[in-house]
Structures are given as structure tokens and as C-alpha cells.
Amino acid sequence: MPHVHQFAFDTALRCQACIICGQSQGGRQVKIQYKLHSWGAIEVFPVDRSAKSLLIPTDWDFPSLASSWGWEACECGATDGTIDCPHRVADKMIPEAWEFLQEHEGETIYDPGYFTIEEVYE
Ligand SMILES: [Zn+2]
Ligand SMILES: [Zn+2]
Image 1: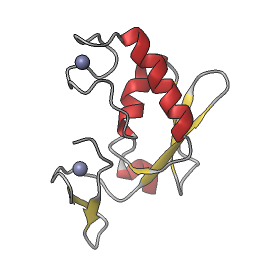
Image 2: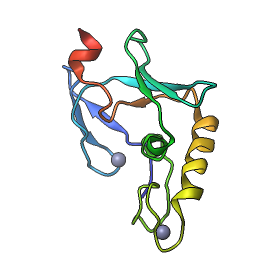
Image 3: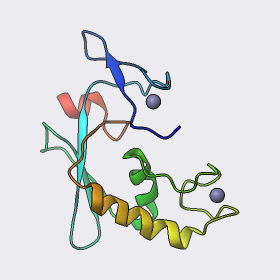
Image 4: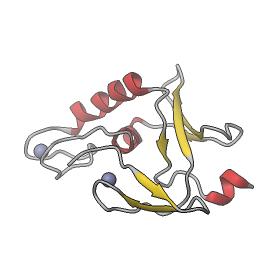
């Protein structure tokens, strides 16, 4: 079931399993968001530590980024959005991921692994 994971955290802010699906992402309670730049790149950064950021320069990476925020390339689950599946072509899904990202700019999620704890808390 697609959903935004609802992670529980222990007292050291270490990530425990998602209360919906039981999956754990590891890491700690760090919220991240992203910003779209006019030249077509996307910058991902921890919400409270915006000095640190990660540039996603190619549209090839947009489906993966969008899926972190809840986008689903195809409900069949056979594609991550960068390869064709029996139902959809990547040439359609990549622009769709970009549109999704435009609509969800500013929304925060727990970091699924863009940053290490050392990078955020250094
Ligand atoms: Zn979950
Ligand atoms: Zn499909």
C-alpha cells in the first residue's frame, strides 16, 4: 500500500519500524524537503540544517525522488519510473514525476537515506 511512512523513534531519535507497514529505514529523525530550481535541478536538504544540501541535476533521478515523497510510477510495481513497464513508458513517467515534484515542493518527509546522520549533525 503506498503511504507516507509513519516512523516511530526511540529516545535517541533512532528510527524504529513504520507503524503502518513495519518497514524500517534506519537513520534518525531528520526531516528533509526539496526546492526546485528554475534551471531544472532539484536541491534536497534537511529542514533544520539547510546549510547541507544535495543537488539532483538530472531528470533521470526525478522518479526516485518523487517516489520518496509518495509518487507511484505505475501501480504494477514493475518499474521505478525510469524503465518502461508493460503499461507505461519512462518518457511519460519522468515528466510526470517532475510535475508531482512541482506540486509537492515544500512538503517534508523523514530522510529515507539522502543524508547520513554525520552529515546532518556534524
Ligand atoms: Zn510504511
Ligand atoms: Zn505497469
